[in-house]
Length: 379
Ligand SMILES: [Zn+2]
Image (tube, rainbow, N blue to C red):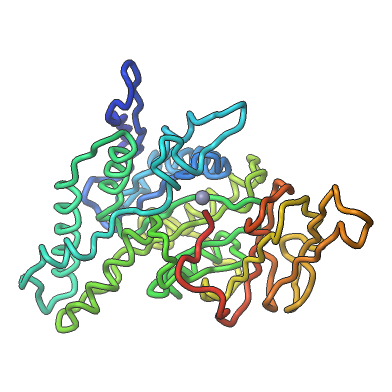
């Protein structure tokens, strides 16, 4: 069955404007497993857009060879609103300029409405319960009526993803190594994905505190299983945020290899026939998100880094110096910023001018840090 492409209109936000969401569909609708892969919900995270270009080509070839066995939904760009947000020649793709906030926060919490809808209908069969939960999730989203273009976009994306077995949300960090975020219920379920992609960290949010897109589809299963302990409810949606290195890591070489890794993972999971090849050796163990130190800038200034992504550091090591160009004398001008954990430097800032409180780096340690709780993501 050849690829179908839908162009779904978003609600009109201003007179005379119209935007739409493009969706590529492979395989028979309703076939299992179902995968949903979207790119650049943070619209300025360009590596994801190029990966989708390559992945679409690879899936077209697999389709032509009759290899698609599941259902695969590809959203080549998840955020046409953000793609248009160029302000003074700079791309502002992370927050909605109309005031709706970070595009990847505050996704709908489906847990309570779905628990209510399930009522006493759950059974002793896990497969039957999975179908009931998916139906209740879809019905919950059907009741949502968008009041704006951004709400319309969110509901549209969520409806495409809500019944998937696999949800991959492709992002990138600032200046970073490949890594991914998921919830503890999907480790080691995500281990093959992490190995295929060469992830240098797998960060487990329990939860992350920001209601990102990926957790909207994975976390409710865990909470439903806790609410209804007498009925088997497996974590039926493996969902992850994949961070495709840093903003500047955009090339056909990288994106082609990343797309090939995603295709191999889809083959391994039975969505595409054919040999996925040998699984690469894993480069990371999963660690709790509370174990990631995020040193902050104590004042405004210019960062001069002492370490690059990939460096191993120890607690107390200087990550960067913060420089006040107007300070009197070299001693006053330079303030060291240290890490509070032993670990791997996963990311740092691409733009080196900072204001007070801005995060300077992510350092992945193994033990949970007392100062890391509640909201664990970066805005
Ligand atoms: Zn992002």
